[in-house]
Image (cartoon, rainbow, N blue to C red):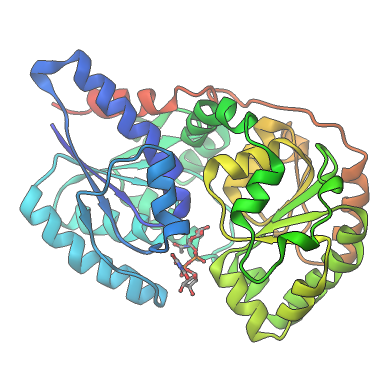
Length: 388
Ligand code: UD1
């Protein structure tokens, strides 16, 4: 059997690593019927810090093919990916194409594969935010509609697919593959030191000497990430969030912010960058590696983020998380469902109110069914079951 797996952007990398390991261990046990696996990187994320460091630290073998798509509008990224991926499929003729998550590579490569009559497996299927203005929601809906095998992270996702009329035979409930990586790297992360992480990853425009290291104490730091177009692309929305961070969070805690290239660009564009640089208690970092981010999350009093993956990691670690979004495709991570996250949108009064409540919240780890570190093996079993 031959599988082509596709990655494109940062959140894909922690999901593909355990899947590739599952194939490798299958091949050790089944020497006479080995799975041939090829990894395709669309090249959507190309900076070392957004891509290469994940490959190195998560032991992902170098991609067999890099489509070199790079930055651009959605249509450009999807279009260029489809043109280049079609050539790969014509050459390789795999039995399965495996796509992950909800990035542009997921959409582009699932559509291209179906047009080549190749079976598609979608890992992390069935998530729905209900917000069609999110590029990721479009990617999820299209990919799930056409994929042959829908591997879901939780029971709410199974329900979403059934509500859309999906035949049960296409669904495999496997759990959350990202948690495989979290469990694998948890111990290694625990051995890292906050100050080393900051020294090694400080944004080039900040000075290490300005940081009060005595304040970097376990459970006494705030951690944030923000990159969604809905938060960073509009000045009217971004400015009040920055005001809140600088005037409130940075007064209470050292705030550690590994910054995404999109957000850095927008902060500069809206003239907010100098205020960020001048705030001493705001520790601006370059985009972090997976293990470093995990370590900071393990020791944070509070997380503020618009990332779906971090919402899930906060749930398993129990870190109180303010999700800077109006909706989520991951309701399993919300406090009302046992998780650690609260949807606060981008209204400052709501963010403020929930921020104060979250500071009183204890760290309560929660593990939804099948978030057990063994999801990648179940993904592979589901594919094998459906391969003649
Ligand atoms: C993409 C995903 C999003 C995911 C996020 C994680 C889609 C639709 N969106 O959004 O779901 O949460 O990745 O990071 O696929 N850039 C660099 N260097 C890089 C990559 C990007 O500087 O290595 C810049 C680009 O020039 C662009 C901006 O960052 O201006 C955004 O990159 P893009 O790939 O368009 O989408 P993300 O916002 O990263």
